[in-house]
Image 1 (cartoon, rainbow, N blue to C red):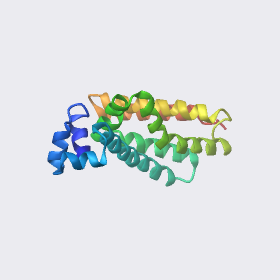
Image 2: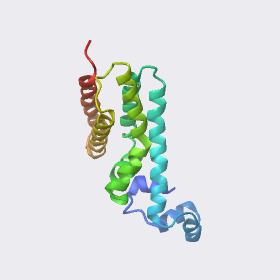
Image 3: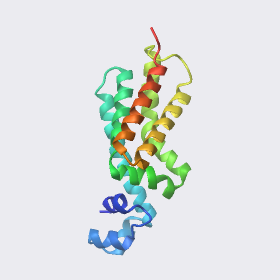
Image 4: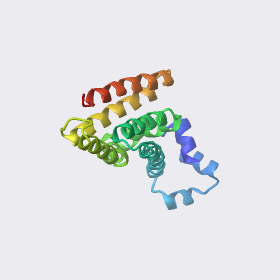
Length: 179
């Protein structure tokens, strides 16, 4: 229930009274499980991250080649950003509610490690030149999240998704070691 309300109305316009009314629980029951509205939002945000990271991981692990896994995982992440709930909860309200630093730490905990491992595998196989993989992972991670913000705020979200994918694909190709 809270997910649906946060996704539809946004954090600021979602009243705890409406959450308990629609969930058919008492205010006491809500506060038995969550300290406050922000704590409830954090639980919903973590569920969204888990779902989105799971989509990206499933797409990446379906590929044997680390290069293709990187592309597939990134594609699945960006596709997930077309979901209005992801846009509102993860991309728009997440940083505003938690603060940019706490949101960034949480966000990285779901994606950055796996992406870094794919980059390390690509370097080990000679698909990408040797370089600081941690720095590269952070920079690509930042670019993907800026792409997610573009998608979330775009009037034509599908066109924005295509543009982000095109530019990200060019970025990846620029990293690829030339034979």
